[in-house]
Image 1: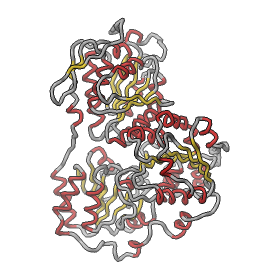
Image 2 (image 1 turned 120 degrees about the vertical axis):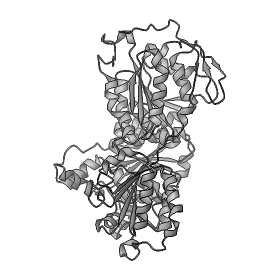
Image 3 (image 1 turned 180 degrees about the horizontal axis):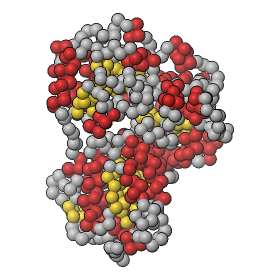
Image 4 (image 1 turned 90 degrees about the vertical axis):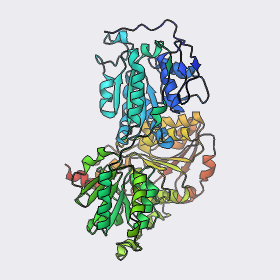
Length: 594
C-alpha cells in the first residue's frame, strides 16, 4: 500500500505570483493540494461551495480559508449533505455554471448521493468533493473508512456521476481536477466526483504550479450538418407540423418560438419543458404527459400531423404519457444538442444533432419563403379552445373553503412577477403546478426536477439559487411531507439573510401517495401526517411566518415586501385535502406496468 506522510506543519502558507495573461497565478511550493483545488475553482469563477464540515474534509476547508485575492469563494454550510448537493444544483441552474458541494468521508459522502443522483438525472453540472481517510489508514478499520476495502464510496458514486475517481497519489491531483471539471461541463453535463484522502489534501506541492483554467470555460458543441439538411427537406415536404419542447431547450426557447411563429406551428411541451415558453402564447397548446392538458393530448391523438419535432427532450415516461404511441412513431423527428437521448427514439424518422439556438435561427432564415399565415389547425374548433376547460377554470377561480390548491396555483401564476424563480417540489405540487400554473416567462425561471423526483429538492435548490442571486425573487413550493424531511435547511436561508419565500402545502398527508392509492384502487395506508403548526415551528427558529386558510388571506400577502426582507418567510397554506390532483394518466401507467 502506498503511504504518504502528511507534513508536520499543515498551515501551508499560500503564496500567489502573477501568471501569464489568460492564465491563473502560480502557486509556490508552500501551498498544499487543497489550495490548488481552491485556486482552480476561483479561476472558473465559482463563488460558493455548499457542504458540511468534518474531520477528513477539514484540510479542504483550510484551503478555502487561506485563499487570497479578490472575490474569495464563500462556504455555505447546509444542515445535511443532501441539502448541500441540492443547493449546488440550484446554484448551477441560476448561474448557468458549475455547482460545487463537499462532504467528509463515510456518512458525509453517502448523504450526498441522493442530491448528486438528482443532478445526474437532470444533467446539472456539479463538482462533488468528498474526503477520504488518510492513505496509511486504508483498510485498518479507521473511523468512517470509505476506501475500497471498507464502505466503498467511490464505488457508490460510480453510477450517478460522469467522472468518478479516488486520487491515490499527489501527482494525480491536478490532472484529476481538470478532468472532473471538463467532464462536468461537457454535454451532456452532470456531476463529477473527486475522492481525496485527507493527507493528500495536506501535502505540499512538489513544484511551483501555474493554474491553467482558461480552457475549462470553453463551450463544446456538436453539429451534424447532414441530418440538419435532411430536416430542411422534411420541413419543406410537410404541411402539418407540431413542436414538442423538452427540458433541454436552455438558451434556445426564443429562436424556437420565432420559428413556430414564422410558420404558424402549434407548440406543446413536456412538464419540465413548459418553462421555455410563454404559456399564454396563442400557439401554445399545453403540456403533454404527466398532469397535462386535454388540448395537447387531442392535438396528437388524432394523428393529423405530418411531423412532430421533439426538441431537447429525453422522451421520458412523464413527458410522453408513458411512451404513448401517439408521440413515439414514424412521424417523429428528434432534435437535440446531445446524441445520448436518441436512444429513446429508435422509431423516429430522423435524428438531428445540433446547437439548438443556431439551428432554429438558421431554419427560420432558410425556409422563410415557406411562411404561412394560417395554422393547419386553424379550422379545428380545438385550436381556439382554452387551455383549461370550464370546470377546471371554475376551480382555478373558486373562493371556496378550504382553499382549493387549483386556486392557489392559479393565483400565484397571476400574482408573482415573471422574474420570480419558482421551485416546485416533488409530490402533489408537481401536478398542481404543471396543470394550473401558467406563466409568461420563457427563460426557465420555473424550476422542477422530475428526472429523479427527490422530495426536498426544491428546498435546497431554491436556497442555492438565491445564494447565487440574492436580488432575484425566489419562491419554493413544497409539501408538508417534504418539509418534514428537509425543512431544517430553511435555517441556512436565515443564516445567509436571503429572502426566500417558502410555501408549504399543508394537508396533513403525503398527498401524492394518498390520492395515488385512491385513484389506483390500492389500500389506503401510510400517507397520514400529524397536524402541525408550521408557523410555530418557523417562529422557534427565528423565521417569520404567515398562515393562510382562505383566498382572502392569500390576497393580503404582499410578496414584494417579503422579497425585500433580510431573511426567509414561511407561508403555511392549509389546502383542501380532498381535491384530487390531475394525475390520473400517471396512475393508469402504473397500473399497466404491474
